[in-house]
Image (tube, rainbow, N blue to C red; front, side, top):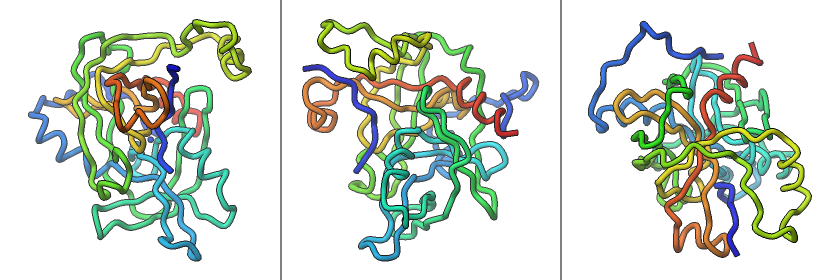
Length: 256
């Protein structure tokens, strides 16, 4: 049976002004700039061993205190023990630090969540104009595939925008029209980026960015799975999806 699997393990700023052009760079230079803005999304509980639980990926934008991730990542945290503190993981490897955050906004329809930090701002990524993205365009995304299994080290994957496709796909069999799918069909479908790329559980919330400028055009949130959900790791399809950046921009603007 084929299924879609949300990528979770157990992502105020304005569009970049036209005149503020960023000079193209090699991918290795862009990765160096992108990585400091990538954070883990998780929770902290003093009585747990280990005290910090990793859930997914996010990235910092705006004034350095706003963090974007996927709504389904936050849903897992909100459904957990009320005594847990939601927050982000910064740094790398053994020196990673937990920093508390508040959930400022959720957009379940577009699978987006906005967290807010207090204190010292972090390095940021800027949003590009997602309406300019075309099929065949080269992209990259950075996050934590498989979570802390590989250590808290940001990993970058190349991607190609293989299609601009509606988020709601037709069902091959009426018996598969469950309540959730029917609810989606009642809404006007919106376009998402289909990627020729391999993503794994833990990659949810990874920014999809231009490999020459680092401008963010989307946020990775879903992978196509052939068979059972375990196949996302053992036999990845090489097909992933990302929410276009305009929905992130809308979420940020509503909080102003």
